[in-house]
Length: 267
Length: 265
Image 1 (cartoon, rainbow over the protein chains, first blue to last red):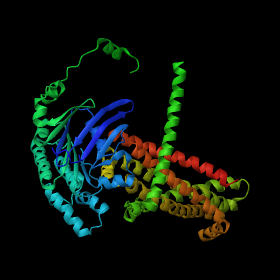
Image 2 (image 1 turned 30 degrees about the horizontal axis):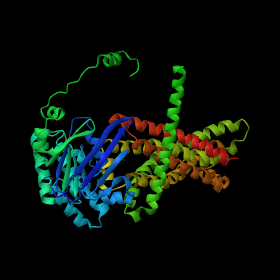
Image 3 (image 1 turned 180 degrees about the vertical axis):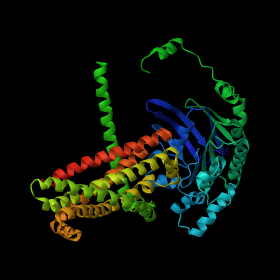
Image 4 (image 1 turned 45 degrees about the horizontal axis):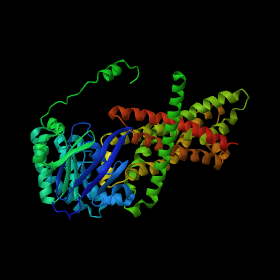
């Protein structure tokens, strides 16, 4: 990779706490333009927390998060809004606004951030719905859509402003294999057609290997490895192999602690 | 020792929690005012369409129930006043008693309680479910300040509609009082209302209206801040809705008492 190109995401020494519990331990994370990066890890590995920090929804306790060269911790709220216009996010549950139709949902970023006339907005939002194969569904309410359609509508909303950077939280969660394969295909097309950098958070191995240029494996709030699909598959790290081979963790039981947990009056 | 310390600890936690809630409400208020006045300059305009929609929901839709309840309260007050004043042979004073107590107190209070039940709970439920389904996060990452989109329109709508509803409630309650009292007083409803207008002073109305503005602030900020702080899925939304109604009605009654104390010295 060309060293002179600025990374589109640069995270250094990120630490996050939930109450007193530390969720992220000094995470370093870089994504180059045009890359599809998959963040992988088991439940509770800190994937979602990392994503929330990347989106600027949480302020880092320690460390720096830079998106498109801007330090999220030091921006004014105006600059943060300007930055967010260049991001697209598709949330895990879709997060479509339930009081609006699908078409209005997709058109909302255009309505709020551009001064385009109503006709252009309508055409552009329908265009994006066509991209995600939801042409003609613009007048339905989100409650009338199936799970896969909600994800695709959310994706249409995320890309309506032609973002440079797209985040996708758990694209395949709760979808059947065919639909989730279609979504993977769509993500690849988006990168090729629109030259977006894409960050996908997932725990689905199959889809991760299919779409990823590089994979970051998180475990217990630490980055275990960042590398290509082949590098991850060949890794000798035990936790990574556990994840890849769906091996249950070997939990060592500390007898004293176990007895204490059972007998203690207050946990 | 442990048993002694635990209630103290709980008290301390509650106190800091309440202080934090008040601070959060104040922050929402300041941010809403800023966005309303200067938002358009930052590309974050508060939309008139959304304010109008909120006005319809909190104001226009509440008109029937506010009128009905106020009129009932008016009748009730007239019954009680006449019963009490008859002992002194001063039934005619019911006009003054009803007019002052309704405009200063009951109009605003009844409106406040109805709106807290209708809209305070709606704010909490709507925002709560939006937090749970990540819609608030989605707004933020689209580059729309959630306060501008969700809080400011509701606040403005409430600040406009509450005084209007209060005036309506005053009128309905006075008519209610007149409907009952015109019998025992042996006068027509028209004569009763003319008498009422004669005894009313502007400051009676102002007292009720200034209260209603404070009630509007309390209901909106409590409803919205409890909605924003929802955790724990659907059950959390339910809990926060209940809490919003209870807290805003309590705050309303306490604020009413404080106002009455200072305005009637």
